Amino acid sequence: MSRKRDSLFILNPETGICTRVTEPFFQVDTYCIDGDIIFFNGSSYRTKMCLFQELWSYRVTDGNLRCLYKGGRYNMRGLAIWDGRLMMLGNTNPNIKLFHSEFYQVDKENGRIESFCPYAHSIRSYVSTDCTFGGARLCASDGGRLYFISTIRNAAWLMALLPDKTVIPVLSNEGMVCDFDVRFGTIFFTALYEQKLLECYCSDTVGNYRLISRFNGDVLAGRYVAVPQKHTFQFEDLEIDGWALLPMEYDPTNIYPAILDIHGGPNSCYSEAFFHEMQVWAGRGFFVFFCNPVGSEGRGDDFMNIHGHFGERDYACIMKFLEEMLAKYPQADRKRLCVTGGSYGGFMTNWIITHSDRFAAAVSQRGIANWITVELLCDNGWYNMPPQLMGDVHTAADKLWEQSPLKYIRNVTTPTLFLHADEDYSVPVEEGMQMFSALAAMGVETRIVRFKGENHELSRSGRPLNRIRRLEEITSWMEGHI
Image 1 (cartoon, rainbow, N blue to C red):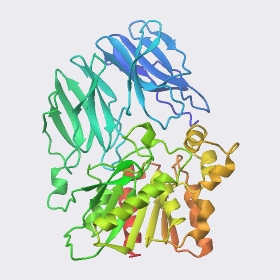
Image 2 (image 1 turned 120 degrees about the vertical axis):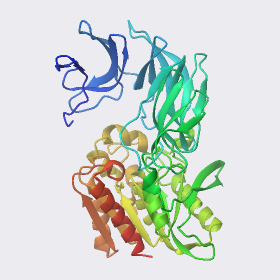
Image 3 (image 1 turned 180 degrees about the vertical axis):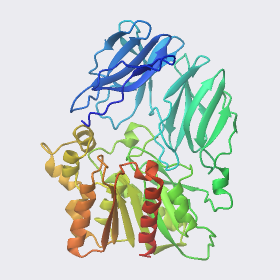
Image 4 (image 1 turned 90 degrees about the vertical axis):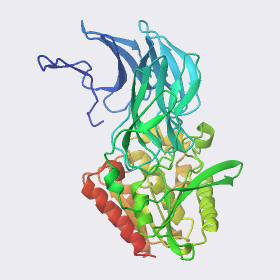
């Protein structure tokens, strides 16, 4: 819709001439190279993005451009050359928020796509962190194996697909493999391991790894770094994982304020990887509680699927987790509890303050207030919201309103700060404005902060000064209300 597309170009290093391969409105998603042929997938559109992509080939030597598959069925997530075969990673599910995957083999000549083997988990990392930047390699082949990153329970592992169609873990530490490459049996990767910031590692093919860089070691030198204390509890018939960060200079005879932090998505997950904002709060004397409730990534589609039921089992699960942590840590002051989260975590913060009065302060970040308006205003509303909500404004407006925090705004007594970026088109700033205006009209203490020139990624890849300001706003709001 913005008329900006990721396009495929060929650069001649001798002449410096760059030749466009794809037409201006074609969005290239992923590509791989096989000799003198480039395989790539994507689609051409002007106003409405295509969910199911086409598959193309381009021969560099003679400029032959061919459409191998016209699209219409496959949600293509990546391409790879594996022992001479063209492999495609993706699925056929029109509900893009269910990420189960499958490996497909593609005939290079006629584009015929056949299933190679299914895979029960997602292919890529959905671990939430604020200490990485940029994308990651989806997959790479070496020595008869196809390597890829996958989210397993609470971590991002490096996995390998073998010729016999079995999948084995290669790097299965708690934390997060962020990016990787593999050459001649040696895996080079970046990771958030053992409460370190991002560093480079190398490993053999059976997971014996070692640290090979010290880029960020000095950043944490002499600073308090809280080690996540894991707590697994029972919710319905499920095991739910959560953690606590203990406040700096923790003394079990003292009482401390606490922050409940809720991840986005909801199809993402928290892990034991270093998380800067949580460490800041622990360093300022807070307990920090965080968990992976139902709806989170890493446990398969059944666990992840809360579509059409936002604010129901997920809300009950999160509040059960809070009770578990308060029982486990009686040093957390029940009168000085704060809650925050971004995106889905912002929605859940809005839902919590409209359904509970137990928090002394709340900070809702890029949070949805009204499913009706967000479907019509956000950049992905037409394809994301209907499957997420099991309805749209034309067929189920009453259902959307029932699941909107704004409907229950009269219940709010919690002092609440709203943070939004004015170029956030995933959750537009109007969502925060609705909540802020309603609370201000009711006389509930509130404040809204809008960041110019930032988008939905402010907390992860925003300008450093704005990220600092954001964290200062959140922290000062919470400290000012406990």
